[in-house]
Amino acid sequence: MVSEKQLTETAKMPEGKVVTKQSYLKHGFYRKTLAQEEVPQFDYLLNRFIKEFEPQTLIEEILIQQMAFCQIQLDRLMVAEMKEYVSQCKHESELFGGGISNDYFCKHHYERIKPGAYDIFSQYAARLENRIYKALKHLKKIRKARADEMYDSQFAVSVTES
Image 1 (cartoon, rainbow, N blue to C red):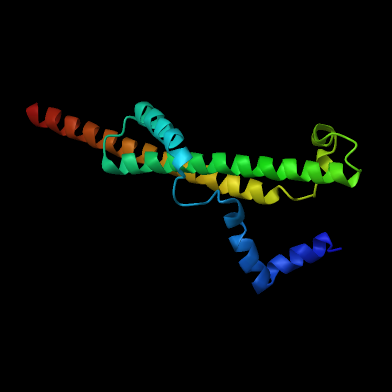
Image 2 (tube, rainbow, N blue to C red):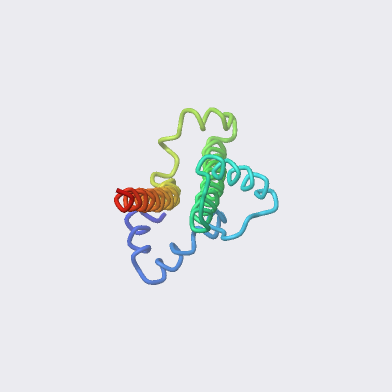
């Protein structure tokens, strides 16, 4: 049996880093393309974001597309996390001879399921959420700069007219 300490130390070794670095590919939530079934959801999100933010420039449109795509990736992550959780519940149930339903383990034995198993999901979720917030922050910055330019040009016109 491999201890938690050994797993942590393995991830620090060069070969462990390669495995850890590629672990997100297992679930596919960082995939850079949309699956066919994700296109309608992406279009829906994109249209909602466009309606909400009313982009004025190409860069604003790009930032909105990034936000929509990151949200798709977050949704993928939630599905992968749920599959992992159900898989662990099933495994726990089988350890006890399968006489107890998976639902029982999912509700009552969450703490016993692989300590730290969901840390990787939390890390990826935080990265994706940070990307969304960063895009939103840039969007606000661009809008503020444009508003300041409009104010400056209006002020310049009113000063010259006086």
